[in-house]
Amino acid sequence: MPQIVMALMVIALIGTAIVTNPVAAATPRKKTTTAEVTQAKQIVAAAKRGFVSAASLTAPVTALTSFNGVTTKSPKIGKIKMIGVASCVNPCEYVGSLVGTIGDQFGDTYTGTVGSTPENWQELTEEAINQKPNVIVFNGVSDAAVTAQVAQAKAKGIKVVGISVTQTVSKAAGYTAYVSVRQDVTYRLMVDEAIATSNGTAQMAIVEPSGYPSTDTYVANAVTQGEADCPGCSFFVQKEDTGSLVDPTEMDSIVTALLSAHPKLNYILFGDDFYALSAAQLAAQRLHRTVHLIAQDGSTTGLDAVKSGIIMADAGCALQWIAYAGYDEILRVVAGEAPIAANAWGGGAHLWTPTDLPSTIDNAAMSNILSRFVNYKAAYAKLWGQS
Image 1 (cartoon, rainbow, N blue to C red):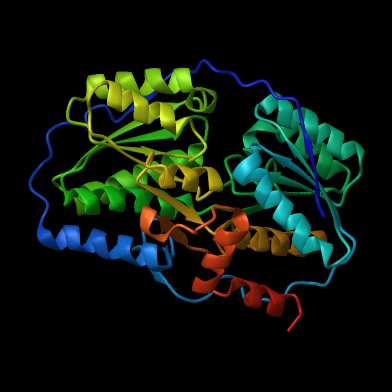
Image 2 (image 1 turned 90 degrees about the vertical axis):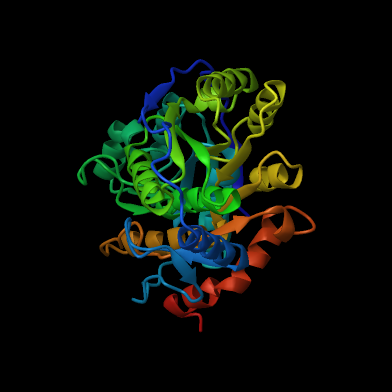
């Protein structure tokens, strides 16, 4: 089984808020039509029943009922030495550990490490290079934070694969391959949940982590689509340092300031579900405001927050499916093949709400539920010559 090595971490707790789209929280343009609300409700209903996905950033979000990933067979490789560098324990390194578990059956080895700051990731990557692996797997680590170390790894013939991340630097400076976490879909799904549950009247803020250009793109697209689909809604975007979002005191200050500045705000959408969301809820309660919180990732932390009533819903991809896609990408690049595109693994987003939570919230129970919607395990077994 994969070994997980925890690095000592220091989280920078003080972050500077970066406010974008400051005019977006103005009075909505007009009333949202019944047809527009119905469309959002249909997408949300499909996401609760199974998965939804989109063929591209601006393509419609639709129900997904079958495997939509790559169909070209993967090369057979054995005894791959993998070292993971992750930006969080759950869901980041959990996905890394799943990659290791998948590799166990082929005689591979995986050692996972976790850090919370760019400095941590750089140190862990340098340590990984010294251990001479075949591949370093970056789970949730921005490529821009480790460009010098990635260059060192490539110079030594070590492949570098980014999972749950997107490319933010040049091809030459970036990872060998990328597997997206499909936040292009989940940000839009969170917006649809707000539209559907408010009947087209949501006054929403999207709080995203700063420092991720790809996230900026996803959020901007979700707002553009949301404004088109819900004329009666309003949108406000705010960026915050991740260190502030995971600290209860800082989260309290962020939400207090946000609600004080926007008296009609009644939905807050968060870019991850491992933030200090209970502090966000308490801040709203202290101000006597009815505010619905929605998050994304689909981790056990997020589902616990749904169960306890802290957030109303959690949008996320199947973490196990992401791990299968990541391992498939590793097989290809270690064999010297060209990587597939970051979103070519397909995947879809599920919306977890209080009515469809597993009786026991753990990763195994979640995987068992999600794998029933699309049999991605069988699809990859076929790609890997196991069936």
